[in-house]
Amino acid sequence: MAWEAARSGKLLVLPAPDSLCAYSGIVPRVAQSGGPDSPARHGSTAPRHDRVLKDWVVQSAQKIALYGPPELKDRMVRWKANGQSSVFAGARRYLRLLNALTKNEVPYLAPLGRGQGSCPEQRALAIAQTWQVLVRKWRVIPGWQELLTDEQKPIGLWRRVVMELHNIKLPAGL
Image 1 (cartoon, rainbow, N blue to C red):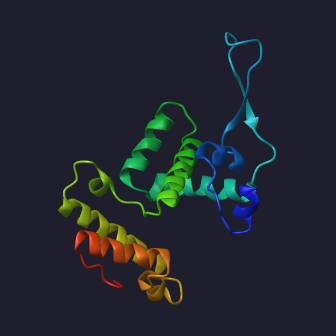
Image 2 (image 1 turned 30 degrees about the vertical axis):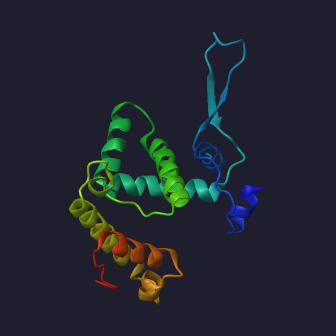
Image 3 (image 1 turned 180 degrees about the vertical axis):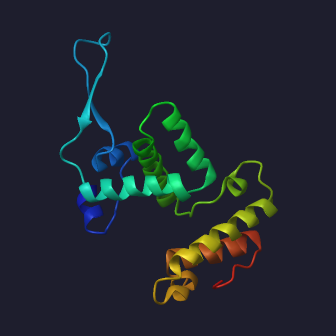
């Protein structure tokens, strides 16, 4: 039911991250028989998966490995050094991150601004950096300033909320 709503663009319930990873075809099937003492057998990914979602998530993970935030890039390097498939592990991490951000309705912030011990100045700096990235990415769309400032749109609402909460000024454009 949730998948049909997601495919139609009317996401009513966000599936669990593990379910989303399986649906996208980036986790192998696991089968175990013979009791708890026998090892699990890992197979290929499920033949029935959303190929468009898999392509999108895998390409996103590859781009994160090249151009993403330093903490995510470093994590992918460690996975690769450990002999894991860094692209699929990164894709799973990416889907989990997207799931959390979507569920909480917040944009990604650098670790400097989201940590427990971050001070208001660090949080304001991280928000300003995130805002610059958002403006740079959305700038190519016609009517981009309205998208970023209209409080009826998610990014415009986020902009107003963080400006009020943190007493900072985010410019409409760069």
